[in-house]
Length: 63
Image (tube, rainbow, N blue to C red):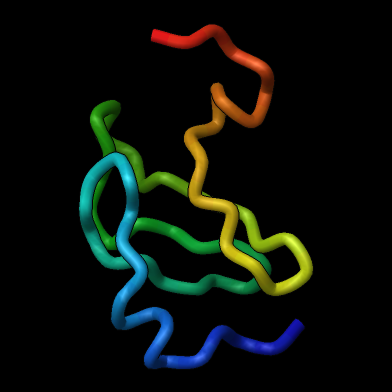
């Protein structure tokens, strides 16, 4: 898969931490740690960033 354009990465932010996202292979990772102290990871679906928290993707309950 091709890398996301640098201009897109310049504007994308993590919806949880507000930090920049860095592409690492087929995923995006936050540049700052999340609430649990680890960097959050987001998938790319056919080159489109999926910026949803993991529990929302897994059918978790609404808070």
